[in-house]
Image (tube, rainbow, N blue to C red; front, top):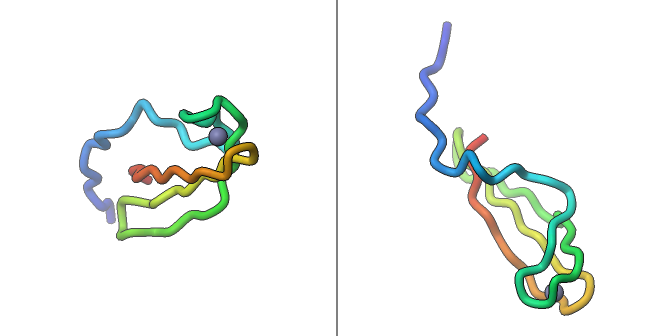
Length: 60
Ligand SMILES: [Zn+2]
C-alpha cells in the first residue's frame, strides 16, 4: 500500500549536521530534531560561536 506524498516545498534545503550561521558565519550544529507530523520535522541548529539558534521546517 502506497501513501501519497505531497510535493515538498523545501526541496532545496538539504538537512546536514553542520551549516553556517547566518549571523556570525560560524559553524552551527544540529542539536534537535522534533517531528511535527507525518511529513514534517523541525530541525534546530545552534551556533557554537554566538550561541544563536535557528530552526527549519523540512519535509521528510
Ligand atoms: Zn553565530
